[in-house]
Image (cartoon, rainbow, N blue to C red):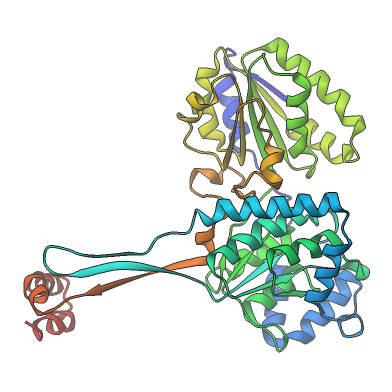
Length: 427
């Protein structure tokens, strides 16, 4: 765990190294993924069948390729009332937040008599990747599927690996709540390829979203352009800005809430009190042995955790912007004052009573966020990731008379005579 102090002479170099550090798993999977995608494109279902049997120990032809809506409905009904109510509440809040993201069409006529504007519409089909194993989270189903449905996507196809036939019932229940249209029992790069290219059984989609391992992320990267994607995400991260008036146990739990995701996750504390930082360290050590995820959380904290001591938290925003964290907690007396000065963060949690974990489940805003400092240029998943904008233009004879000569002049200047001719023919 790294400890930095802005008063130290070597702070700038050490902080720059922290900003530039990369925690992605160092796996050169590009060639393997390219080979898998090539096979899926050429062989379709046969390649998907063989690769699923190889990697997941699951025979699609014997056990079944898909999961029915009835199975998802049964999984929902079988939940404990407490879990069912929690998922319903989360879905309601996520849906309400994302409904406010729907963009408005525009249509106006300017002084020349030219009508112009833009019309928004949803893509026809979207694919949702849901991991199996460690990262099989029903909350991710809700966060990825609900914005697609709010956008108006007609067909939402979910792929999820079922190693040795194992099904996550909470994931199926979440798919039922979110209105997923079809579920295929496949995973890995071959599943992403099947969604992008289409097979005899699986129709292609226009956009693919959802988290996955290095192979899934690389498959999405290679297929971007054939389909749209949400983002190529890396290990999770959290930056907590906290003063000494916080309960150190609260802050320790917040830091470990991301550390427990994966050994490559990162948790950073910025504070203006060395004594408070010390009490947080003690609280972290007290909490770690109580977690079932201790191994991942401890490795993450020991290898990638950091604390940054400032003379004043008023100096935090420039450092925050350089880190551009996926999650930013402002656990201070006046979080809005700091928030107003922050430019780069995936999602911000304001005040001592707003832990990032609320955002992971049912706060409302999406928890699919840019990682690895990508918040400097990217945003979290939204309704518009499942939509596209079509512009339109309409001129009558009078508008053409006003705009045409200048358009023809510009076409001449660019050496495009057919462009000029198409305009002058109408003048």
